[in-house]
Image 1 (cartoon, rainbow, N blue to C red):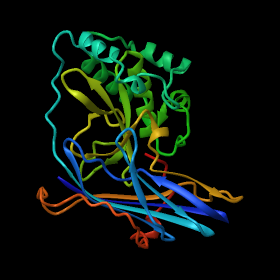
Image 2: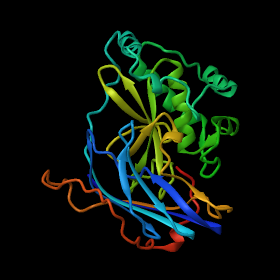
Image 3: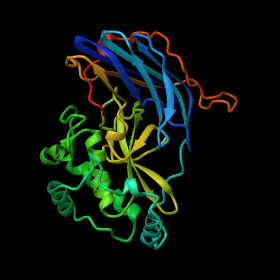
Length: 320
């Protein structure tokens, strides 16, 4: 399946700021079943955009606005090809826990086993784990599937009920949250059982399917757990789904702190009037595949960004 993605982020400031430096993690990854065929990132005011790859393999675009500005718009557009991956088996072969433990003892998954800024144990998390009766059981795949289904049943999806910097206790106390909260709670629980688990930011194509409850027109988040015999496997606890060809992966990290779509600093005394005004549009492109002769495209110099198709669509949105 081919997807077209347009992601517009607007910042406005009460007073003009200067020397704004920012980085963006908005380019979909090219690996496995997914390939980013074309990508462009532009800013208004215009700037020179440079690119590097971080230690998790995410593509990061870096730019600075040297002059004084009161508004900044970042526009990312992508064409992404996603193929279906084989369905995960109902269970792993006997001895899966032993194979997993042997792999983690080698030390290669340290970052994805330890607590991280937004995914760490708390008393409320321990209460939820006890309430769910979570144990290792016979199989790590079966355990995570059960955990995802339990969270789907016990936590309400409630847009704008938490902030991007909210600790998991906010969602646990109210028993409601957004995709980011579902992902952080899942990661914190799964890691306690010795399973490497990481955060995935990206997009979910909704289409005519009304079974998903996460918001359309926003970014999405889910998790990946490393399992013996399968490698990294995606789970979407917000929608109680296995991640598939409708999930477009952009960046991976320990938690949201590693992969915000935009992050930066500026010089000046000001507040951001619209902390994050975002318009996201994900749609299907004509055709089902792209020829292997079409190279991936990454621009090094930005162009002047075009305004979003509808100003009204750039409503206040939280990540996920």
